[in-house]
Amino acid sequence: MSRRGERARTRSWPWRSRSYPRAGTAENGRPPSTAHGDPGDGNATLIANDDERFALCSTRAATQEIVLSSGVLAPDNTTLAEAIGARRALFVLTPTVDQLYGDALRRYIGSVLERSDSEVFVLQVNETTKSLSAVDVLAAHASGMGLDREGPLVAVGGGVCLDVVGVSAALYRRGVPNIKIPTTLVGLIDAGIGTKNAVNHGGHKSLLGTFSAPEASLLDPTFLTTLPERHLRSGVAEMLKMAIMCDRTLFALLEAHKGELLRSSFQAPREEGTEAIRRSVTEMLRELSLNLYEQSRRRIVDFGHTFSPYVETASNHQVLHGEAVAIDIAISSEIAWSLGILETEDLEAILGALASFELPHHWAGIDPAAMYESLRSIRQHRGGELHLVVPSEIGRAVFLEDQDISLSLLESCVARLAARGSRVLK
Ligand SMILES: NC(=O)c1ccc[n+]([C@@H]2O[C@H](COP(=O)([O-])OP(=O)(O)OC[C@H]3O[C@@H](n4cnc5c(N)ncnc54)[C@H](O)[C@@H]3O)[C@@H](O)[C@H]2O)c1
Ligand SMILES: [Zn+2]
Image (cartoon, rainbow, N blue to C red):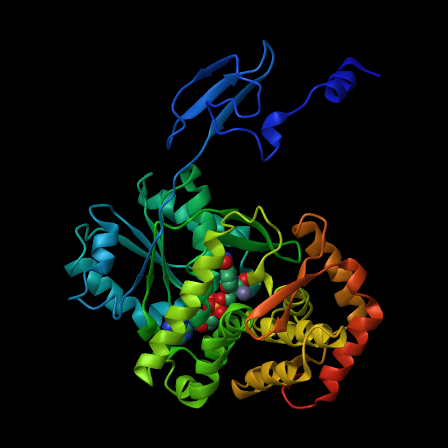
């Protein structure tokens, strides 16, 4: 064996283990021979284990503010101005959002922001072009305008815009501050409040991305008034995900006011609309706070996100993200029912809730064998295990593993959903 191989066998890598002590301590019983520095933000503790091995141990503090505020672009609303302060910002919008809100934003920049030389950039990007090329275009613009390390890069848009800007902010000059202003329901309750940002790559959904918390998320439900109903319903799928996993009250609230909430874009009944958004955001934040960097791969918020990447990619994104999530919710619930984990009554309540928001439970293009094969990539993403999260009742969940899921089980579940007929996407 080579000297290198011998060393690899006989030496341990304590800093690779999760139980490695916090910098500067000796909790593992092996005191560092040398330790310098305070492991606060921006500092690392240098540990010299011997003459050849060193470790830099650090933690990085991050505070993300999440603010619910109606009418963030109104001249008398100072939330955004306060978030940006004295910095020269670059706002990024996609064309539709520019058409709807670009003028209001430019007026706000000109009359309310401290730096009226902040810029607006309209980025041509959608789900099918959400890739590193979009990041490239944005970085070129940021560099051209001389955006410095203080940033901030401010995304005003749906999940696609938030994701591309989030990745760009993490990469540009090795990281500049990012502010998220979601304008879709998916953005408000999911993409706009998390720490994850990703773009698609090589036919894989969200293959390249970062964990980087935005400095602030400004949540303004009035943006939803212009959102097309199909995209609104898509967002409801993410809401139902949270409700089915951990909040029976939210589930009941959505069921009780479904028609009006959908017709009014969650503006009426006012209290219930706001409450539904607030509950979804709070549940999401609670789940994130327990596992911000996904060190645990068993994530309740992955409900609806195991089969959905296959559906989105196989449909060439003709099935929207939220619609794919709805289809996945149906498949996962059907699996739970088949295995005797979920009662018939709860399965019907879940499928009924999808139907009441006119969400699909099946896409006609599903090939169960290809979908089963796609689980290989999901396992890679979840550290080698499937960790399929399914409901055991409304408000509670369990995790299933490979031995629980066979191709024939998947085939029968998909066939049963297809046979239900209505709410099948062609
Ligand atoms: N990073 C994360 O944690 C995370 C979480 C959930 C979803 N996502 C990603 O988000 C994307 C889906 O987000 P989405 O559903 O917001 O889609 P989207 O960003 O494509 O927006 C949907 C459509 O609505 C338009 N739009 C946006 N705001 C509008 C408004 N106020 N009025 C009218 N039209 C408006 C957009 O131009 C677009 O055509 C997917 O790519 C998904 O992977 C990321
Ligand atoms: Zn999602």
